[in-house]
Length: 349
Image (tube, rainbow, N blue to C red; front, side, top):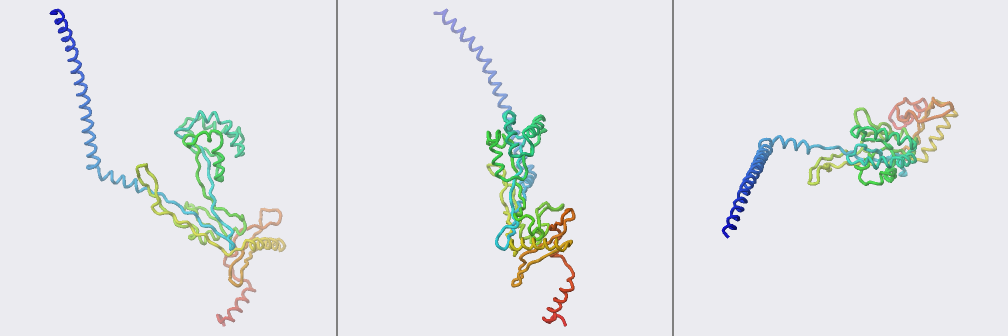
C-alpha cells in the first residue's frame, strides 16, 4: 500500500508540473487577445469621436452634397392631330439592344458553347450580318482580356420593343434570367413619328436637338410654333437613401405636353398636294404654294408648298421651302381687292 500511494503521488506531481506551464501559456494568450481587443476598442472609440464630433461638419457637408444629386426627367411630347383626330405627329418608343461583354457574372463558357446557335438566330433576325459575320464580331471581343471588352456590343438600334422579347428567347439569352449573367441590356429611345409621311411636312414641321440644347424641341412648322405647349414641363428626381439602398424618387414629376388638334383635313390635304403638283407640272413652274381655307370660319384646311426637284431627271416636285407663311408683297390683283375692301369699310379714303 505504501508503495502504491507513493507511485500515485509521483504521477500526480508530474501531471501538476505539466498543467502549470499550460495554464500560464493560456493566460498569456488570452492576455494578448484581450490587449489587442482593448486597443481596437480604443481605436474605434477615437475614430467615432473624430467622425461624430471633430469632423462632423465635413461629413455632414459631404452627405448633403451626395443627397443633393438629382436628375432631370423629360416629359412626353404632345401629339399633333388633324381635325378629325387623325394623328399627324406622335411619339414612338424603340430600343437599342446591346450586350455588356464585361458583366461581372457573364457566363463566358456557356456563351462560347452557344455562340454558333446564337449567331444563326441573330443572322435570321438581323440579316445585316450572316452567321459567320456575327461569330466573327463576337470572337473579336472574346479574344480580348475581359477588361478590354466593350460594354456596349450593338446587336440592333432603334428596333421595336417586341424585338427585344424575341432576342431574349435566342440561345444563351434564354438560359439565364439575370442580365448580369447574359450581359443583355436595352436602352429605351423615343422617336418622333409622322404616320402620314411627307404629307403636310412643312406645315407640321420636325423636331431635333441643337448644338446648345440637348433637349428635343421643334425645329420647324407647328412643332416649333407651339413648342411650349407640346414640350411640357421637365421634372426632377432626387437621390434618396433608404434601408434598401440608394434610389431616385420624384421630387417634382414631369408634366407631359398638350395634345394639339389642328384644322388640317387629311383628305383635303391629300387632294390639294396632288392637284398643286399636277398644275406645276403643266405650267413647268419652279415652285408653287396653295392654301385652302374655309371661308365661313377662317380655318386653314390644307397647305402645300412644292418646288421643282433639281436632282430629278423627270419633272418632279417635292416639299421644300414653306413659302405659304413667308412675308411677300401682295401681287397687283390682290392690291386691288385689298384696296376695295379698305375703301368699303372706311379704313381708307
